[in-house]
Amino acid sequence: MPRFPESIQIIDSHTEGEPTRVVVEGWPPCSGETMEERRETLGRDFDHLRRAVVCEPRGHEAVVGALLTPPISEASIAGVIFFNNIGYLGMCGHGLIGVVKTLEELGSLESRRVHLDTPVGTVGAQLEDDGSVTIRNVPALCRSLDNQIEVPGLGTVKGDIAWGGNWFFLTSLPDLPLELTNVGELLAVTQSIRSVLDEMDLLAGEGEIDHVELFGPSSGRTADSRNFVLCPGGAYDRSPCGTGTSAKLAVLHARGELALQEEWRQESITGGRFVGWLTEEEGQLVPRIRGRAWVMSRGHLRFVPDDPFRGGFR
Image (cartoon, rainbow, N blue to C red; front, side, top):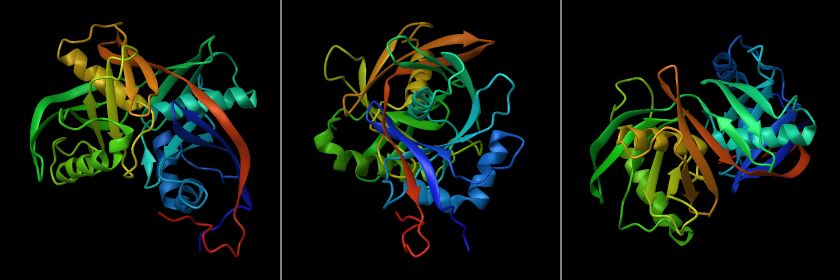
């Protein structure tokens, strides 16, 4: 039978509208020499805690969890494994910004510039003077442009495949407004696209395209584009999505539409905004993403033995 601690201490924040729940204390030690091994340990031994922490009734579909671990790299302040309502993520841009603000809240930042280990590599972060956070993501790449897929009810959809810490299919559907009032249709359309992608192997066995990202014009002059991102668990990203913005930067650069160091302002359908740009390091495109996060609450999640819903549900 799954074993539950009496309680788990958490700190909740949101990054441009998207929630992050950082596990601070109470989670059993997670073994593994690498962050990828630790993520595998979570899936094998502690998946019941993942569900309990982020799923209902203690959480909801949009919550992204972040488990802090000891670092594996000498220069890193901590390791972090991100998880959501269905599983585990390689990286999470909005979540990393939330983690940095949480470490600030705890008084645990050794300096304003830190490194954190993730399952897909070590990332950097800097707490800016205005309270925003700039992350140095893992290298991004554009895998292919103008892939055509046939989607029932939509016909031919053309999109790009890119990596920004997770794999994305990026496309534009001009007749579909990217507005909060249209969330139901946006979810249905992106889920239809991902259902088709699930039946294909566009990455030749090298991974899974589990995010779908729609783009359209921004709502004003404060951003270059507006997006809608379908996450793996069926929720949409309330923020502009850090890994998704990184993937978009790689696509724009591949098309010759974004120079190195040139800023791109990405807006979500909620109005949240990230600023991103690319640098080239050792022949790779390295994204920087800047955004804001706010700590909302500190508390303990309790797991009373006779609670029939202590293990959460979707």
